[in-house]
View 1 (cartoon, helix red, strand yellow):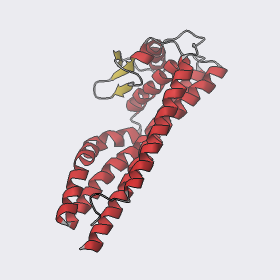
View 2 (cartoon, rainbow, N blue to C red):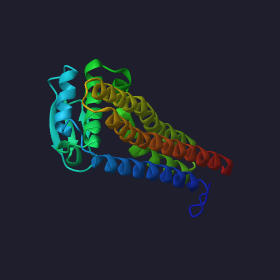
View 3 (cartoon, rainbow, N blue to C red):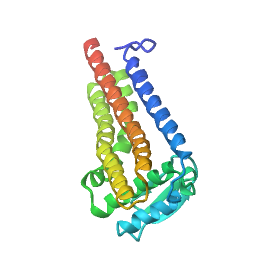
View 4 (cartoon, rainbow, N blue to C red):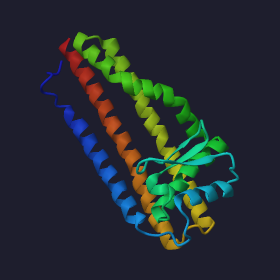
Length: 231
């Protein structure tokens, strides 16, 4: 078994962390840049969300304000669109496109978009997998019990699958948002370019998170292989 004080596979964790930090810095930088660009239509994030929902024929989704920055999300169970302080009352290009993106999830929910339905179904398994995979895997290492090692890998794999399914959900929500913003004149041509940059940077955080989790899964497989050789 790998020594507790020297684990060469930790380089995979480090690589994943670097990817995540780069993506996070990228979205914060891009959002900050376009937060300083006022939307020519004058829409605030909340107003833009209301308009996108109206255009989409959705009238049963509430819009609420939530504390924080970039904490925007759509809650399908409560049918509530929650916009962060940095989005709700801001009339910037960044705020409008982020609000529209979250509306994209509400539209997906209304239309029964397959990947969103699958992701919602996977939530319980992914939560259990992400919280229990490492304790189970470490127990397998300590006691050299291969079934526990495999169970830990399987459970972590569920979390990775969840993140994989999340990618088309996020990309599709952004595509829906851009089509509505552009097709209904809510943003001008130059503003659409900025909106795409904001949403692309946000999408990269999900890509980086998935890459980091895949590297972590690879690490578990390597550690399990080393444990077998030491038996």
